Image (tube, rainbow, N blue to C red):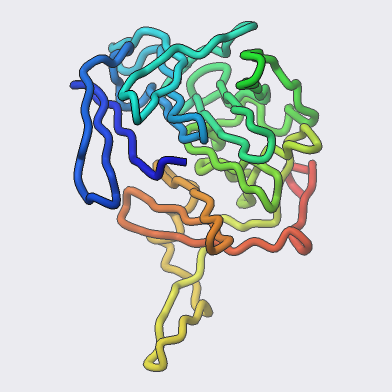
Length: 258
């Protein structure tokens, strides 16, 4: 990984260097029009992948699926064998990098507010796009409580979690190894972090209802922290959540009500 931050937008693509603490490069040569909601990007060891297209509130962007090389400052289309899933709407598409298998997962709903149970896999080595046809898809299909907009592959679980992804108060997930949809024993709730005079943290009090409603809400964006082994989830409501997982004790079920 280059550790650079790539930011496509309406004027072109900027590159931010955290070490220099500055925006160091820019190109206007961006082969797609930027739309805040329908442009999906994800970092991979090969570069940043962008997936664009579809419409949002009267605007449309041209379809593009390609890779950005931060050293060459250039976007290049990726080869595709097979049919790409449709880009429905900003809230209804997602892009996930699987660091274990060196593949991408593409998520597309059936329509606005109608979660789709299909998951597509893109193989960098072959360029093949194929539907995986997960088991237990009926658990999530058509459910407006799930949106594939913010996604995160969690290596210790070997699962994909969704920011807007709670069924009956519990976290829904795509189990990669089992190729199935599951529900995890992670509640849609949070504890209040407090730091004592001794500098130690405690998590004993429930957060306020106002704070808890941000869990799984719009822009709840889980990110895996490999160094610390936790999930961070910032929210646009100025809240920051953190989750420590133990795969050995985590409840996993195919029952949406279990």
